[in-house]
Image (cartoon, rainbow, N blue to C red; front, side, top):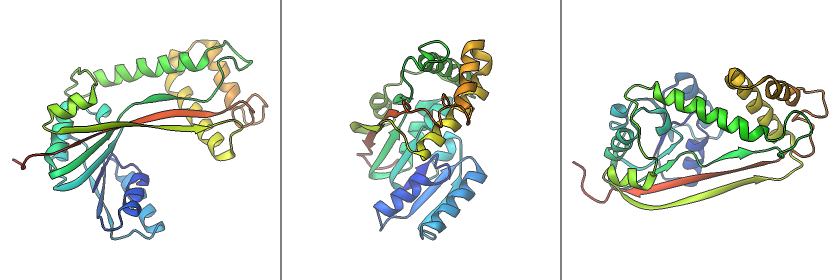
Length: 243
């Protein structure tokens, strides 16, 4: 099994625990993250079953196999030619092998429309700013190629047979525990750093208030903070001999 875009190895460890007879290869472009994946595997007693490999370009993906299962989460969006990335991943499968692609889904929601500070609708404006920034970043990628992001169609164009899509709801209602609040605090901090120049003064000041760890209006203390998102996974199989 191959986990492409493994980051610190969370999914790699889940795959190894869920399929105890499988060997798992964690693949990422970041050497520090691969080192964290190795450390995580050791913490979970999976040393020897999880190995790491560095790769980031479609031509490198094609040399990852032969694999029975390839899992990739939020990777294609960072590759200029997404169709080429899927073709390369498909070429690394064994006959009958499965490619699972998790891309986009619904953006997280964690605050009411009106939070009592700033202007109502903050999250909608943050989502719009994130999309604008993402589109600009994609346009600058090497070999950037516009494509309709119809993932079953893209998988079929990569020579695979689509086998279905499934959406997973992630729902943590208010009041949130400290772990979820800390995650949201870190997320808002990144948004302020990345989107500060795309937001007006009122929205920037509102984000700063949400990040205030001592204020009752901050995300660490608000009783109305929740976490709701959805992740869609598309799967397809290689139903012919490898070239």
